[in-house]
Image (tube, rainbow, N blue to C red; front, side, top):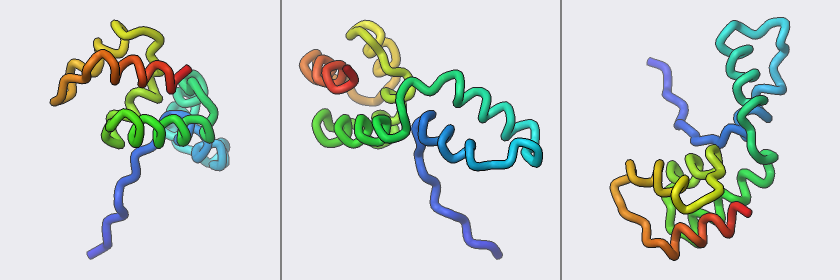
Length: 105
């Protein structure tokens, strides 16, 4: 039996940084498409994405999953942020949402 590697959540910019290391000539279709996707939809540098993620977790009390989702989307308004946080199991107070947006700026 092979040991399963622990899963690691990554933001789109972090995934892009990892995928840039593969040889595109030897990459399969999924790897090429994923590289293309991450190039188009990265909204921050890998370094700033990591920093933003940590800040959102520590200062706003977001889970790792929630912080990754916020960094991937980079919402610009409370309404936009509420749209996808409404699917979470907790309701975030307006002051927390404002803090999230302040960190993202």
